[in-house]
Image (cartoon, rainbow, N blue to C red; front, side, top):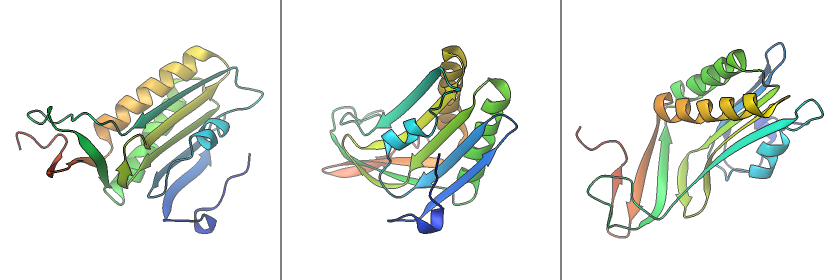
Length: 168
């Protein structure tokens, strides 16, 4: 598998980490560029992986902010803490590799403006067996959403609201 170096990638800057645990190849990144879902799938494929799980989150038109349910979302804007978000993403990927028998993990989250239908997060896991791939993938996306400092703003035709900011 060939990986482009962050300095040689085209388009907006990508902050990424690639490394190997004894049996697991891990790739994490924040990206201002559009996510390449087929690449994320290919990055966890291999003859040693009989099970591959992938989660792709996309921009939907329905609002998630309480009290804004009647509004139509026209895009999402994501912001991430410049140092803590990549570090936390890396930590949870390593924890997944320690918990499950996965050979490859890719976890990439978008930053910036994302249009309707656009992928905003991709988590993929390749493992010898489907159970480990599925469980690791589900745990990774849940941990990412709960613990990585990435903030989402819903943009409507007549304004915007930060998701999760209600009650603050």
